[in-house]
Length: 269
Ligand code: FPP
Image (cartoon, rainbow, N blue to C red; front, side, top):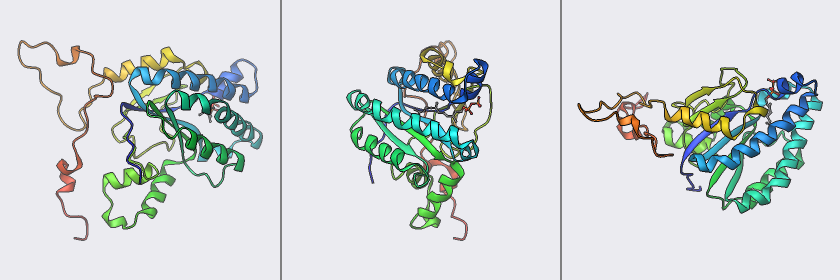
């Protein structure tokens, strides 16, 4: 098991609206996916400077198999080409790339491209980019539980580790969904337990560095209480929220040993 943990915020994005962006311009839907890659590039470039340590991108959901084969083939072709052309730059810039989701149903060439990108960028420590492909959170949770040596001994930590492909992936701090839709669509359901949700009408191909910075700003304006109470400023002391929080130093949830459910006997004990 690896012990790597990325520092900084974990931001997850549902990159929605490629098709509508293309249709509005009288273009085929695939032109929207192509344009969406430009946004991905921009977000990855900007993320470390905005205090983001982990970025999970929803590129293809397990429900997306319902789309026409031609669109799926084009999307996979674009992803494969993207990996081949950008991997050297990722390695040079300290970006680590991994994939989550099922690999057994992906085209063999794409699966090989992912494995190669994972090998070549394994040392990256500036930013961890996780691409979710043939991904379903429910399926991932089911598979993780089934893979547990003893499902009755599972804890929040061990299940989180199993879900991160044997690597403790930090919980999502901020979930962004573009295109005006406001749902999770089976994305990172476990990891988003305390995520701040940010919905924007902006279509994904129009979501660039400045939109990303706005989302991060909005995140820093939220009160994250994790079920506790907001800190009460002492009388005469300036509002504690008036100073900008240090990126990546957001309030963390209590450690599991302090959560009441960990003090209670497991069912059946
Ligand atoms: C949803 O928009 C988008 C997708 C299903 C694909 C997302 C893929 C990319 C942005 C391509 C590149 C990704 C990486 C990681 C390099 P939609 O097609 O559902 O749009 P619509 O709702 O307007 O139809």
